[in-house]
Length: 445
Image (cartoon, rainbow, N blue to C red; front, side, top):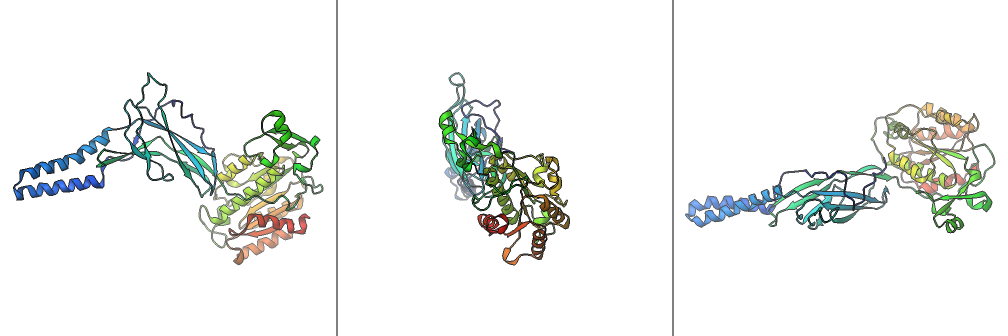
């Protein structure tokens, strides 16, 4: 799911959420020390016969108790609005989180510390926020706080909630207050930029090989459209940008009917045990690398002007049609961020995937599959698909390329004999080198 659009921090929210208490007030180490000292003084007072000791013990006992009452009564009415920059993060890259905090109480808040779930710094200063006077302003003054995330795992990550830690002036008691809820941050897979010169794809109608890049087209063949999020800056049409005073990108009208299909094997059995079978883990290094490679290929094809289909069992189960073309890099990355390993042992059928596209047998578009260990029925499906595809490339992900399991050699031979060009990869392989190895073969020369 995409990250939720947040309200402007200067606008009053429609509802003012009440703070949720995450814990009762508790004494700090200093407060516990005073309580222990009070107990000791009460024990010594009868022994020494000093009434002044009882007074000191009473003060030592009263201060922590009063501090606990103080932090329990002080409940600031805060709201927080959270924004991400960029709105979707890439695995391994930094994402800035901006928090807009407002105090809706008619009393100023005390100075405190804050954190934002497990991802933000554990302790950050939150200054005293002024009181809200509804007759003077429409909304309280906004305090803006920042921190940075570096998510390592793709997917949808809940960020938050915002936690304020209040303390009394003497530091004898603290209380944690949870403000608001969480926001979802979409983390897309890490991708590589693949070489544009590696090889040229034949078109989906079985015609001659041709480059899909717009740079070779004449100016009369190029149309310009408004820039959309995810478009490559290499496709910027500068004359049209100057003419319209807004960013425009090139779009080849004569090539916009060409398609390509990227299939990601996301079945649990394909990335399970070393034998390729068994339960396995819900995520693995091999599967994450496969997602990154499939995403890199899809982005490359989109940049080359292809209408690209990104197919996986888990994305389909979330409601995306199997024949739905991805028209922008942002759409493809969002689909890739949502993929998960699924308990689906049904074999892949390339023909059924493309059944709704209206193509007859022998007119399949270029196919790229990123797979793990495949069952015999899936292999048979891929063998049949290769016969009708203008190009067919399979990237087989194994646990260790230097000691590839026996099923990898068998799968390699079966697909090669059916007309697929096969590349064996593991998590230590370079995605760019794997892609360039296809171009170095004579199949695409």
